[in-house]
Image (cartoon, rainbow, N blue to C red):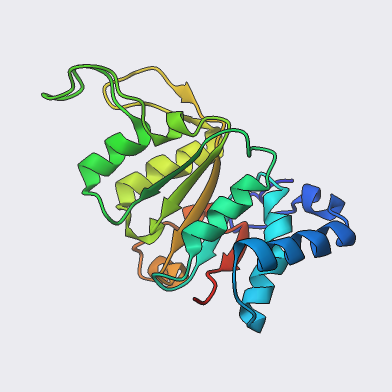
Amino acid sequence: SGVDNTGRGLFVVTEVMQVKQTQKEQHSKSFSSAEIIGYSPKMQQVFDKIPLMSQTDASALITGETGTGKDKIAEIIHRHSPRARFPFVKINCGALPLDLLESELFGYKAGAFTDAKRDKPGRFAQAENGTLFLDEIGDISPMLQMRLLRVLQEKVYEPLGSTKSEKADVRVVAATNKNLEELVKQGLFREDLYYRINILQTFGYER
């Protein structure tokens, strides 16, 4: 698998091709009957995508209105993935101010700022080997978008106040209730980050 040199999102997920149709049908049935309740055609499309999204390590984007269960879909994807025995960590990017969100994501070292009395691991560290769910990713600032892009590209980050890079073996699943394509056109969301998180996409189901 890989991304083309232009960064425009050409991506071939070879692992997905290895999932048999019978497995897909079995998983789809179990999701719809046991973990998600609903019968509309749109919801069945979501059920059909979950097995494929679970069996690859590619970044994924879940879109849909607030309250449509995007977090539930992300958790199901994690529970049926090879990372299931490791943590599922989530954070609402739209609920925290910029400075707090940055420290929550990447952590900090003692002395990084006035109240930093001891080292604190961030959500990336907490989700090591597992899945990090970034809810409302459309609300993050340009600076934070750049830091997140680096983690996705290079699998490393620096906690606040540190000069040493930390490795990040984390699968990222993001969600938004915004039109990221429109935000890209308006210059409010990085195009390269959009294509990085939008390798696989599904839509939040109806309640």
